[in-house]
Length: 138
Length: 119
Image 1: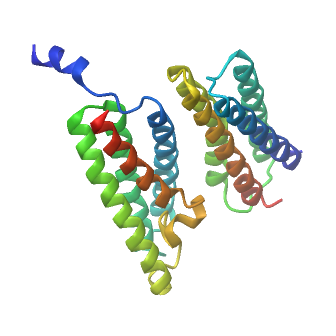
Image 2: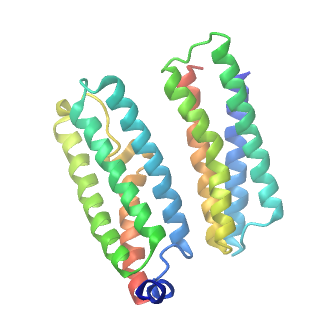
Image 3: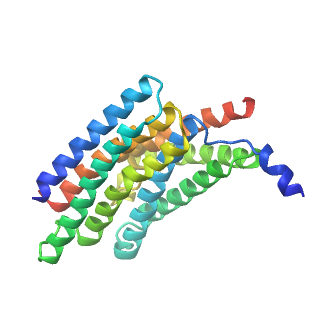
């Protein structure tokens, strides 16, 4: 009974601009996951740190995409936390790759603040945080 | 052959992005004509996928590896249809924005495909 009552109350997070967020997150999931799977499978020893970080990024993107599609207050909060973590991750790894390039023989998704991905990795969490905060008041 | 296809598909993807971006600017959802446009771009990507696989079968080798090449070909083929289905679910200007973003993503994939093939 609780489930049927909960469903209509669940706030949609993918209406309007949300659909664009889901699309971009979906693209990043495919990009980060396929890239890290391939690199870990074929040349993990070359840059273990970089490839592991790409894999983690892919998992975070996957979870955020899922929460956005699912909707609801709990999902919204979980997505908020993950987007904040993602932003911290991009900024940390971005700075790290600039300060200590030797730790990264190969690029990660988050290298140089995601420059190789048109800076989408750093812009996406900012946009998503804004959108998710607004979704609460709506 | 493949290089020409890559160029044509990339340009078509950018045109689609501009067209749907224009629809979004005018606060319109994607319409039938837009879906025909998406069909054309998807068809180009499909032809590219087939030609790419034929080239591989004939023994040509992509510069950056066969696996990556095939993965990008598949991604390029799936890109616009996926965005198109999402715009079917979102009948506002934001559906158009999503397809426009899909076109830009496809154009980027085409540039990467060009590099991977070693043109």
